[in-house]
Length: 324
Image (cartoon, rainbow, N blue to C red; front, side, top):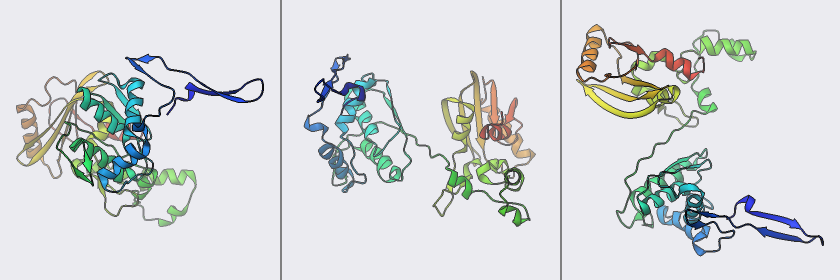
């Protein structure tokens, strides 16, 4: 393994090529060598073999050695215990495995962000992280100990172009319009004929936000969508706390944080079928538990009688389609 700018090939005057290697300076006492020949860097022994021990059969071709990635990210800046490591080609999850191992060694609080678009996210990457957290050592698909880690990870699945197409439904009666491809017709169809499609955020269904679903391309059954997390990203909320409460069978999800420098509270609850009595009880519950105390901005899904609160529905729609 070698950095590209650490190696150069230049011909001498005779026309023969010579390889010039440049040694890196010390990084927190670690020297980045030009060539790595140690057996622990073998992708076969400490890449493929590691996955076989976890899964019985390796679910991923040519994984890197976990030791090679560990040393690479350590030299690259992960020697700091609060480092953030990014890998935009997540593969089998070796980078996450390496970060977890480093944190185990020195009680660090390093974090990682991985990005992956292939199907082996479900068959290799995600289950590998779960296994590494559960136990440090594996063999024949079984944990050899309960030496795990206190760890939490969140994954986000972005809606693809194919997903969006699969979720478009047309409300108009003139089916012949569906076969016209002019730009103005397509715009009309998306703005009006398909405006109630779930993929375009059907705000009428925000009265049951925890039940909102979309079809995933290639899947027969609709999958649940995390609307609260989506809204957090759209308004740039830096989450400070997340609480789940219940009031007489009604589930509440409450986020606190800061958005655009302002103290913000976001309340989600199921309001389907509510009338004045239920909205009054909602207001009393929020006031009694001081759920919005100290907030400069208060967002709630659908309507409410909560003092100083405003509906997040139109904000969600505008931010979703960059209309602001």
